[in-house]
Length: 237
Image 1 (tube, rainbow, N blue to C red):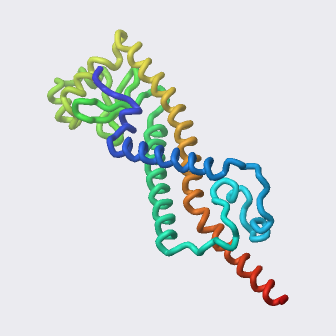
Image 2 (cartoon, rainbow, N blue to C red; image 1 turned 120 degrees about the horizontal axis):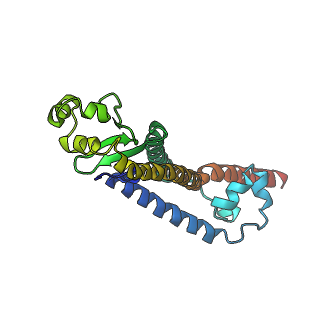
Image 3 (cartoon, rainbow, N blue to C red; image 1 turned 180 degrees about the vertical axis):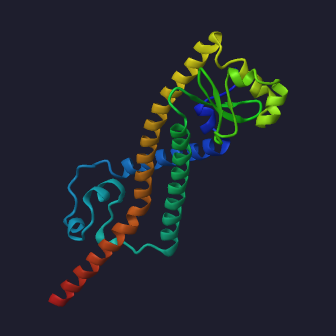
């Protein structure tokens, strides 16, 4: 049976490249964060709380700089942070949607496969096979397979002869049930694993976006606090 499963559907060159880049970046930002915040439980300066800065956000993502040395963010820094955050969110959202769509649209008792030779996608169970993602294109079982010649069925359903031959010599046959059941069971395991992976991946991406955007939130508050502090100081003189 020449086909591939869920990981093949997700493992396109584009998606694989994007995932590797994001994972490497997330790892780098995580290492950098740990390096800058070795003393995670150290006491937060009073001015941070007084400025209305979230303590957790400050602990995780903001490099501690003396208040008097904090400078406003440049327009370029803001654009880079916002653009990168938007791109990461878009990529994560698209990858998650594509993955969840495959998992949800594959019925219980089926596996979602891709025929390697022709890149045709379909769902397969012990009793039949259904076209994917357009499920209305064809549905093959032994009754359909014996209703006409393979050549005519291939033309009628607009399906490659090789895939039709593979399906018709597989589904509903006792000698192939064990192989199909193994594929279905593997898909169920992959379904759970991919769900957990997406959750972990999403959390890391969220922290990455927070790391990029935290200066946009924290810096203005600290600058405002410092400005107010100086005003009060000189007014009292």
